[in-house]
Image (tube, rainbow, N blue to C red):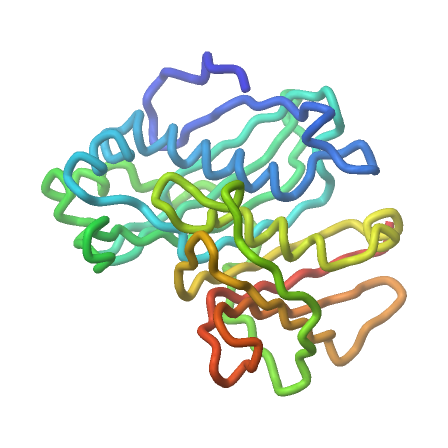
Length: 266
């Protein structure tokens, strides 16, 4: 990443990253997981630059946690290319804040957009905290509700009784973040590993929705349940995935998150 990001403080932050070849897949384009990491990095830079980032919150036993994320892409940055992530706070309520993203090439070409919902929690008891109480509601001065982010918000991932247990994995050192929990993006990477390489050769991951329900820790066993959309076509394939921890029996396990993927034919 170019650390010389835009220091002009406005409501919208713009940060430049590079699609390093070791962050790209067999199509020579950026992995969705690495894009997710860059979005979260941009969110961190943006909040820090404006006084409500982790450097301010952590000493006060608070942290931001990602609740929902939706990413919709027309294309992914190719290897060796630079790309920009713009991010801004669209709204802020007592317990949740909405943050948007635009991913673009330096020449202005838009690759895609993202929408996210974040909560503020106490790091000791994991309970929600009042976002509007941070510096007497200073976050409200950074709200940008006019900038376009033309994708649908993430909606609840509905699943029926036909989901099939596809894989069970243990969690290890590389899955864990600074809070001691499985990193938000690691769930996405594990979900993408459920599918054969052929689907990535033949299809583009057009949209990803993920909603986080509970936290998991080092040593937890995660089970992945997949349900195909009722009407799959040659042009579009959709899947819903539920991740649980604990017992492999869905009724006795704890749901961690749900994810929906939409692939479109290249």
